[in-house]
Amino acid sequence: MEPWMIETRQLTRSFKDTRAVDGLSLQVPAGSVYGFLGPNGAGKTTTIRMLLGLIHPDGGEIRLFNRRLRDDPMGVLRRVGSLVESPSLYPHLTGRENLEVLRRMTGGSRSEISRVLKVVNLENAANRLVRNYSLGMRQRLGLAAAMFGQPELLILDEPTNGLDPAGIHEMRELICRLPAEGLTVFLSSHLLSEVEQMVTQIGIVQSGRLIFQGKPDELKARTRNQVIVATDRLEESQKLLVQQGWKAVHGQNHHLTVPVNGAADAALINTRLVQAGHQVYQLSMEHPSLEDIFLKLTEEQEKK
Ligand SMILES: Nc1ncnc2c1ncn2[C@@H]1O[C@H](COP(=O)(O)OP(=O)(O)O)[C@@H](O)[C@H]1O
Ligand SMILES: [Mg+2]
Image (cartoon, rainbow, N blue to C red; front, side):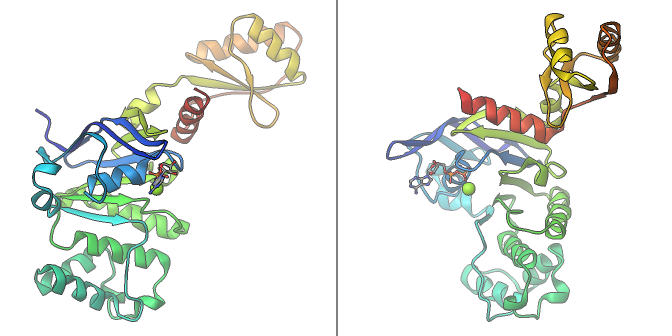
């Protein structure tokens, strides 16, 4: 049996008449960086709050480390570190002092403070007041706090939200190194582009339901290549291609997008257009980016 670090079965939770999470079955492999993705309002935070025992499900089951959360919440959650929304920090204390407060509350050694500061690359800033930290530094200190006590699983809700590109880059570098330290990371985001480079697994939710789960490559493999073509008379070109059975649609700017199977199709499209007397200005083949696929998937679901 696969050693799932997180497994949910038909997890469900409503607020009044909103079904925030609807029959969600997730499987998070050990050692993965799992990107839990979906547009705002999809149910990510509600799911994470249930995983952390902060709210109770209406139905379904949560297993962490192959144990049911409700059988032993304290025992299970002791092995989990988390960062939900912005970290609660004392601005008038230094980074190190903030962790010292945490250490006194939860126990643990002083060397543990140095260890986590090192992991998040804040050793040099440890004696500065948090008030003077950038948002990215605060977020990293929050992550250090989440890693205190050597958890096996980190659950992070939108850890890149609000960070500038440099902050996102630092967070990404940091998170990518965690599996090598024996950690499994489960993180949410409403922007695939921000987490694409660090995740090894993807789960996409929309309206509380899981619409995809698998590796990034599996998500890519679900879509076809497309030909981008620009001509001197787009409307007619589109008509012509549609008549011949291609699913040509207007892309942004002045071009058509045509899903195809391979290079032979690109050549055929070119020939047909030229034979009909259309001037082809541009013709290229591309694979949709993960972000395109993500947007398309979540849009399609919205219409249902
Ligand atoms: N405490 C709450 N009371 C009422 N509705 C809520 C509450 N928390 C979340 N919701 C609703 O549940 C849905 C999912 O919200 P949320 O889990 O925060 O989504 P996400 O984190 O993906 O943006 C939304 O429609 C939201 O308005
Ligand atoms: Mg949220």
